[in-house]
Length: 470
Image 1 (cartoon, helix red, strand yellow):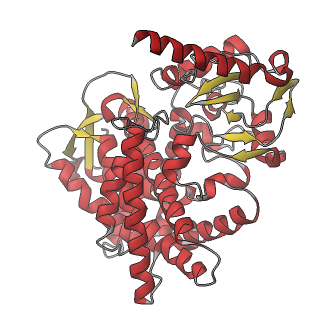
Image 2 (image 1 turned 180 degrees about the vertical axis):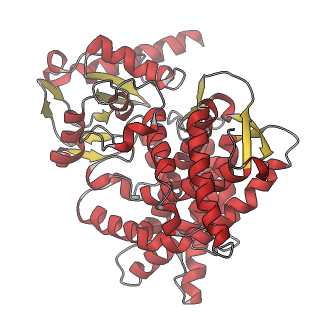
């Protein structure tokens, strides 16, 4: 058995060596390491702190280097100028893509993976669902989700695992964005299947029984069937319904989009709106807990808004109220920079590309390293310090890109910021929290978050202390 394993590793090594050295690329590829055959440096990337992984290689090789992750040879770039070339000025040479495992799980017809007319058509539809004018009407529904979940934290007899709870919250908001303010009962089954699917997002594409990828793909197949039934139900009713699904079904009436395209893009939106927002909110609570002066300032701002609501017949939050949460918005901006949960994005060279004196072979992945740019002292002085005041002035162009850049930037950024602001308003004006344990390590779930999902204890905040120092 051990001999077979050795032979397999040797064959994989030869294949990787042949790929790297074919067509005379060897001397013109960027410096770097391809790691182990097939596995590459995947295990190092997802077991080390991302800052460690990228900083070690940047110091060793410079701002452009090669690697091999998730079964893909790739080139990583870490300068704002290079990122702009890949994402904006020469985006036609670098198509959007993900590793095969992620693409299969999300669905090949999701807008993430396309360029040209199909992408333009889909992006317009998605943007119409996530534009400020569209999400203004969702403030009340999102606020109700917050008011329903927070009291459960207060009465918990065991630690609250922040990431887990934030995923529940963000998923409910994602359901609204995907299916409308009154989602059908079928969405509960979709939720269970999606939770099984996401466990395989960072897995190697090994599709045989027992592997995380195989289990995820099994859930993906069931999820597709569940979505098709929901699509058919709405179609039979004659009502397109709300959310992105309603917008896509209206487009389908013009015979311009298929059921499989609808399903892939619904799953894609849930992926984009769910895990990322939950991870950012987890880091927000961590940073506010660790920076008492920042928390105190946020509380003052949110208390002022709450007093205004109480003086106006105890009304609910509105979109306009969230536009006055200026400091809280800067806290979110700084969290997006400091945590950089989207450490990079994936592009793929559509042809052999001459790039800064090197050759990026056709088919290789190209990864702009957002985290490295966000943690450069050239653009953000003392980047290791959590300092929301740095966003009192706009950052330099192309140095702050938490939602990407160019035609494929995240269309749901406004919804993400809105749901975070609503949540933080109610949390900071009503509760206090204490982190259990002092470990600063991270884990992937699927994005980097504090280890253990940030366990906390939540207690009610006394009204009589509303204006006192925390």
